[in-house]
Image (cartoon, rainbow, N blue to C red; front, side, top):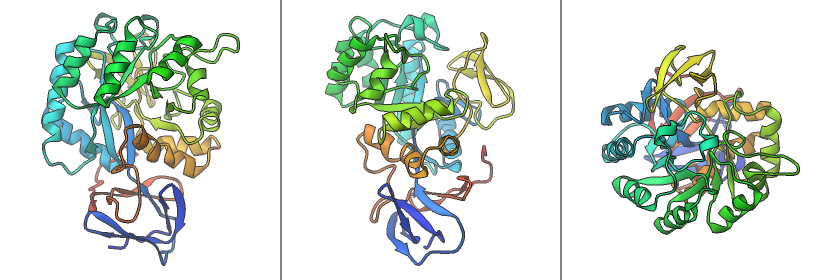
Amino acid sequence: MRLGVSGAVVDGAWCPGDVEVDGDRVAAVGLPPARGGTFAVPGLVDLLCHGYAGIDLASATVEEIGTWRAALARDGTTAACPSLLTDDPDRTAAALARLDAARARPARGAHLLGAHLEGPFLAPARLGTHPPEHRRDPDPALLARLLGVGRVDLVTLAPELPGADELVDLLRDRGVAAAAGHSDADAPAAHAAVDRGVRAVTHLHNAMSGLDHRAPGLAAVALTRPEVVVTIIGDGHHVAPEMLRLAAAAAAGRWALVTDATAATGMPDGPFRLAGVPVTLADGVVRNAAGGLAGAAAPLVRGVATAVAAGIATLDAIAAVTTVPARLLGRRDVGRLTVGGPADLVLLDEDLAVTRVLVGGREVDRGTTTE
């Protein structure tokens, strides 16, 4: 099957010409191109997604998780880490078990990667919308329990908390990526965390110590340490265009766009829940009862357009939603378009809008999308 595109992003580089798919694999690239501006990119990979299309993953049933996967795929996200906000440990464990049950079922939607535990080992002063009653100081036994319940690929924690080093060691030993976030770390603590094995920061500039020129914090360290993948919310509300450009320049080749999406994504304005916390969507922005930002409501592909509008090169913005997040997780089976690789593909038009999606070479029904 020929896709009818004028070009494709192949192994991170622009390749003129059409793409051919055979079954669930990419068979050829660089074929005589079709006319028009449509081009192919790897399926998008989201490292931080709490919900979508009315579904909150903290309480979602196995069937609803399947619906969530289908909704993501319609908008071009073909692999995602289902993300769980700080919550009662028993509820988090139950959610992880449901995610594992859903992962065992066949689904015609986004690939269900391991969960992203965003908490509960977070700094009290940087909680944002995370419920303070469920925040915990570092507890290796609790972390080990959660890791034993269901598959986890990524954990966000505040590395400056006493005992956090043990958590980073545990995650490294289990092959789980450790990210620093919701953190008040000063520069020495942040550097020590990277030295210990932290390899990412969660939503740069939001809920973390920053860029003060005499007292730099986690954000500054993340932008200057080449080992660190810098994730950033590209919905146009969480981070100004100048800060997107700064991240792209300072962390070239190692910054990733994430959605921090909630159940409000793709839904009309109104009230929603984020792991039991009441939030409200109005004019594209999700806020908690205090008026603070509480997750987001934009699909991942919108982050690409937001980054390009901010002056970032299109290839760099596409890498930020494909190869970079896949590399953080140590995955070579997602986020890549290469001959012989999986046919998880997204077709974009000249405005960077999704026109067609394939997962495993099969067409995704895009009857209802958020864009």
